[in-house]
Amino acid sequence: MASNPCTPNVAPRRGEIWTAYLEPGAKQRHWVLIVSLDARNLSGHAFTVLAVPFASRIAEAPSTLVLPPGETGLPGVSCLRGHFIMTLPKSQLIERTPRSLSASRMREVSAAIRRSFDPEAP
Image 1 (cartoon, rainbow, N blue to C red):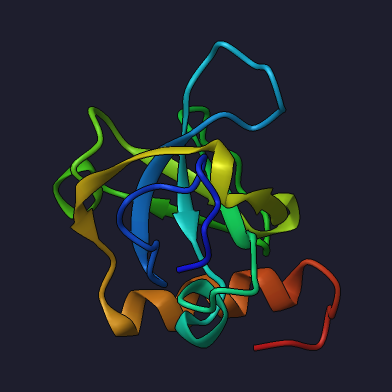
Image 2: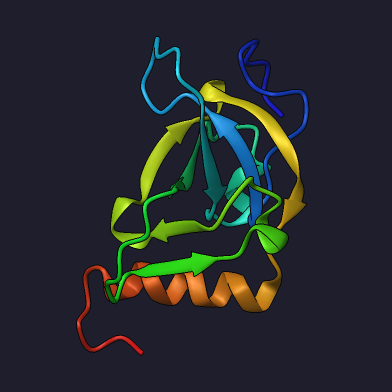
């Protein structure tokens, strides 16, 4: 990794769940799913990742995905809203949680993100 003193000691990887500050200077932590490709995540030249924040309020929509607590390790049922995808500076990542989503679940996440801007997406 590049010498960014605010970057976590461990590079984030696609499918990992992290706690993060969603805004610079924020005090409240949020859980996010890293969705950017590892080629970018591990690059010493990239100081941002693509992430989707988790929500505890379940919302039914084509671009959402409901995940059980056993899969995420989070305290309750969680909702990923693909339409809330964001670029997040690595410096705002705080801590990696012990769980990662499977490759098949990440394909579902990618499809939910696509459906947020393409109504024809599967």
